[in-house]
Image (cartoon, rainbow, N blue to C red; front, side, top):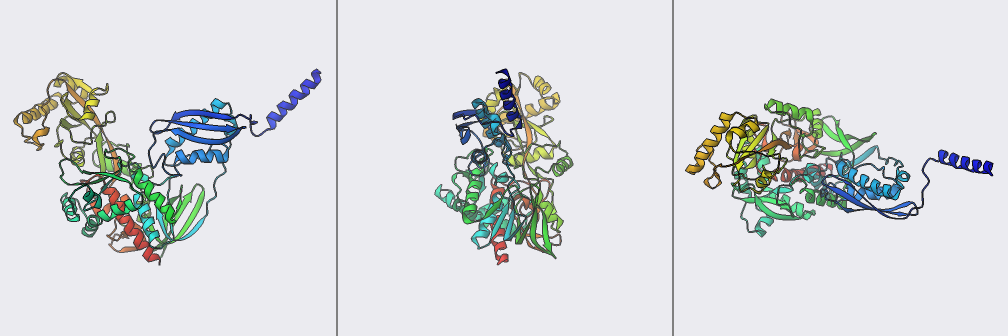
Length: 582
């Protein structure tokens, strides 16, 4: 009997050791799991039937629309389906949405661990096959607002279109933006009883002192309304129209539905609508595919070399459109730009992770005029309470405690003064009577400095006591007079600082870059001698050069400028590329 038991045990051990996968247990039931995502916890429900993974559903999450969820390529939708299809949790994360991807996968692992079968579902997924060569009329490189608009317009004009996107989802910086679109003389403005015109927008845009190409600027203003019509026709749900700032009279900033506040991620309704429209119209989108070199035939551009994983891809095309965004995530370029401006190097950015200047590099390699403008769209904001975007009644001070601006001015106006003063961060000094809700919230936080005297406040801030004392005393004098003799802040926003003082640190971050590829009003890429590179077009942030120039003191006109620029000149590029391909 003992010998039989030994033989049986040996057989079990041998079977266990020789098996390549754990034996499935036949477990059935529904199990839940929770794990952190990008914006908060993600909860899933996992259904097992006789040891098989039958269903995975995300039941709760607070992820970003257009990035975490909203399309079948987003992690909330894509990963559960892939896990069921492949019977494993080890599916690839969605590039460009890695935090949400990790949250979904870890939540599923937690559910399977609860069921006691996690080791059963750890198999590898075979890589997907990708073609090594394509022949199309038009290839678009980059899938943000500009690239998607270009692809749709080219398709609407009869072209066979391939769009390649280096991430696993479309959207780029547009998705993670505030979702605002600048436009004048629009139907939406008329619906909301707002009077405006392209001429009024032109008057404003040309009053800022930026360098600009006259034809490009005129086209931008004249076609902003039709660009917004285009977005609506391609699935964008809009909401209220607002002013650029309370100090600027005209209401022409169009918000995504429900997106009045400047919150990262409100751009999802724009890119989800454009992506679904592009796919429905027959645009082929190749994800996880990065273009790295233009193919030329003499002086003409006739295609793109790209890479998907380890697969080299050749895309032959009659026209190429570059729409890869700016270079905010090009650490070498951005470090130099900030160092040249006398600023500490900041790596915090709200731009999409794919903004590494790929299109600019590709165009430059074939003779295009390009600029890595030292100017960038900087913002100074509290990372604890969020103050720093809307008008403030207190004092905005440079890092050394000096007042350098009118605090009531448009955000990018006072930001430029801080940059000009080489201030790598800023202070907001106020008292208990400050009317701003975000500031009031900030006063309740332990991280906010508070003191009963200017001397104590200066010591806590690490600034010169005499400088801070003079700054506050001078400002309080203006408040008592009702006239800001130095910077002209309106009297109703002059709030004398008394009693307990508070100092909230505002750190600098970046939204996007200026400069890029020089183009004309037809979105054609220009050489350094001003002639056109045949077959090559560019649009969006990768080609911001001609609209705003390359001067370090560029004044960003308004929230929504970059997105509508991408739509206008993306559409122009698409239409012209399709015409060239015929």
